[in-house]
Image (cartoon, rainbow, N blue to C red; front, side, top):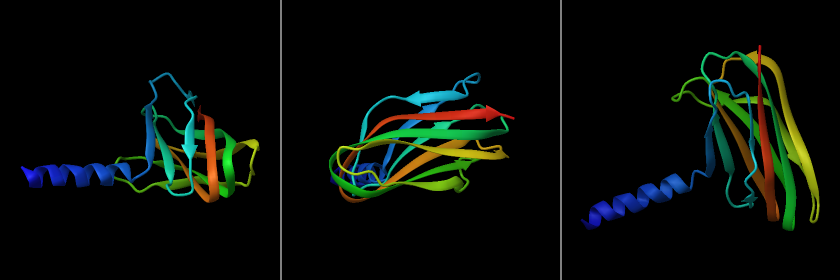
Length: 147
């Protein structure tokens, strides 16, 4: 019994350390989704969010996020958007990395736009903070443009 509890505890820690914060599944007719929950980003953990898109869509994408500095100073927050077609595929970066270099008491909106048509089914937004401090992810928007 002790071994079972130990295995479950290790599995929970491994799952929690991945940094995934939220997963959203878009309905068949939805191509735009806003996450309005506030999340706090630190410099100790990579944070990411995943969307599952409707099937059979060849598309381009726009991703937008609003960041508000809370405490201290993040010297940089690297924001990346990824896509993949199948659950067992590797993630492929979509567009360029956006580097947010806000400082204390600063807020900014960052956008990643992709104009190359692709057939991704899964999307992931990833945040990596450096420096000291915390930043609030105020809201996020994902728009899938059917092509």
